Amino acid sequence: MKIAITGGGSGGHTLPAVTIYDELVGYFQTTASNEKFNCIYIGSKDGIENQVANNKNIPFHYISTGKLRRYFSLKNISDILRIIKGIFDSYSILKTFKADILFSTGGFVSVPVVIASKILSIPVIIHEQTTSVGLANKIASYFALKIAISFPSAKKYFPESKVIHTGQPIRKELFTGSKDECYKIFNLNKNLPLIYITGGSQGSHKINTTFKPILKDLLQLSNIIHQCGKTDGHNDFQELNDYKQSLPDSVKHHYIIKDFINTQELKHILNGTDLLIGRSGAGTVSEVLALAIPSIFIPLPSATRNEQYTNARMLEEISAAQIINENTLNPELLKESIINLIINHKTLTDMKKNIKKISMPSANNIIVELLISNKKTF
Image 1 (cartoon, rainbow, N blue to C red):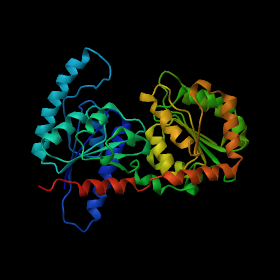
Image 2: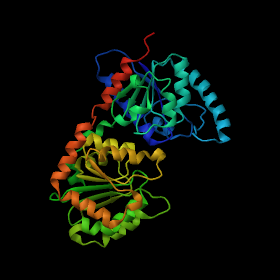
Image 3: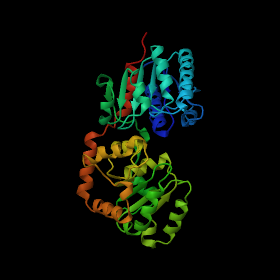
């Protein structure tokens, strides 16, 4: 089987792509079939997808790209020309590779590849990670054979006959974590629940500064692992570490402050978390869904199409999460919300049960089967 993958511009597009690549590699290594598996990744030269594909040793081909805009701009003219060139670039790459199917995870770089695949009669499967659809996937949907969606609310944006609710691809290693291992690695207090604070890979200065005044009180009731990120332009990591040194010894040691958390640590942290507080990007929400983690979401207000709020709202509607809007966020409100949850075990248990009602932990397998069953056969 020869599969071409495209999608990029952000980690939200590239991570699902390489997650499915890993799943396909595992499938063809363990299946009884003698069919060989080959894959290429098509993206932009300077996009994050180039680095990600190279880290996975996936042969990478770059094409000319242009940004897609919903508003008038003179740049649209030059970018349309780049997109047209990108279609020709993609056509040449796909024809040479003789792809059986294209898997696209969105981003503006994917549009030329999807169009070229359609010209070559290569079946196209696209995946939409968010609850609100980007322009790239909206355009790609007209050329796609099937459209996989992470969240049911995205269904309304696409032709109903093409849509399959698969859930979000999740890295398999996240399911191999252990609460016991988490408490052991970080030497946490076994008698206290674990709160995981995260502002995403870049961190959130707003979340970090809101937590600082209430950390001492929260540490009386819980362990806290705080992924504060780099927060460019600020010095949150050092300031929080300095603050930690001023805490009483009785609580200091179950406050863990990290600027970055690697995958090996993350799988144990997520499996050990009793309550997550953080942004509500598609990746975080998908992990919460997969591992049934009760959460308080603080959506990023500047997110495209307000998608973070929409993601969080989906879980709030089924009493699986709470939302605090950033414009109302303050230390006392956050402290009250957290304490009300961690001292009420029944509420947390009910939240976990509600998440499990809509979770899709088999998303990887469903998408792989979708790709294999729809590959080109002529």
